[in-house]
Length: 403
Length: 119
Image (tube, rainbow over the protein chains, first blue to last red):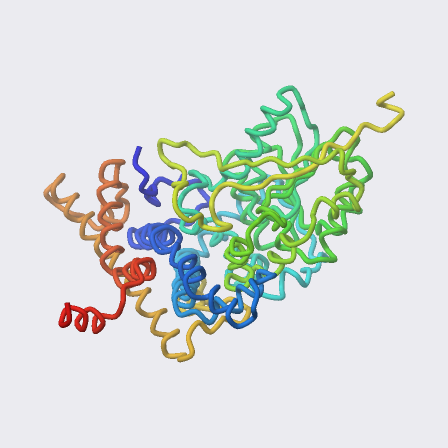
């Protein structure tokens, strides 16, 4: 099996996917290779620069080793190699956005019309203009995606959702599979092994963006009803149309904030899911969302989060610093604070007792014949490899029912 | 394309959030952006040329829509992928060799010159 990344044209072309010209696809192919080169072939330059000159100079100056990842960051940001490497990486992110936006915006009228048609007929979309965009979504444009996940290019459009979907391939090296849904597929694979006979009736996915990780849940549990929520209408419009285009019927995309689930009653879901979402929040929003999740989760139900690894005391400070790159260079401002805190404790404070919590490692599930996994050897592409830390809790049955 | 929107201009807008300065000289930051956009364009042109050659090989004639709709099979895609990898290695030689040099820690050449003149 080749360890070269798959070509962009191997992606599944569902009806909502923006059509790429030959050269637009070729630019994404270049970026896929370029990203692998930056993290693989020359990524080790960061470690060498740190060990050979930045760390010795730090010790010389301070008479001790760094005690926090921020100290390493301040020192590395003065290092010529790390500055060059960061400039390359930042440009790669920006080029991905630019190519995605050119692709989408030149055909926006068709995409908008297509989405409107799907959404009018499917009944999968429910928008609520009263939902405000939280400050942690508008402070910066997350992932350096111009307009973030919420801004409209014109009223009612699908630009940001379509751009997210069309370019995800380039930043993940194609490791998420033909529908960019390897994360959702990974959840399903884990759960089917863990609880083969479990039949959740109602599933809530919080922070679903375009639903690429929520749709696999609906497909794997066709008798369940999936509610996928997000505050960003511009992403939901695309996500609902994409799900309809894929023929999925048991999912609904609803504009709502995870901080306020008041429209749903206590114990109204069997499963609450977040996928790569918690690091897009803020310190005050995180506990609120977990508390609301606890309230709407039925006894015996599952809360499950796919995330990046926590920065534990066992994780070397250098690795923490490298994993933090996105926080400071790719507009992921809560990334460093989230991974620096003890989420198990935040979960416990929200009502998920320590003894009910668990953690597992999962990796993207994609057809390996077409989408070979990213190579494991060499430097990891910190935070972008298609393997994740997953944690959650099974909510105990209520005492009276368990008795 | 929306009638009221210039898609070329709209595509280029920046993401909200202050961009880090990677170099002391702002011109260098701008230069990186231009050079690597060009690098990507050359890569796309190389793929396009490969597509044209493959279509001509196979059919002997060429239509634009065939180029736009071309989907390489696994073998063609691996050949192109390898070619892209080799291309990136050529244009990135300076960066890669700087990493090698960090590892090697060679003494400055004048030191060797001096040493050979003595020993």
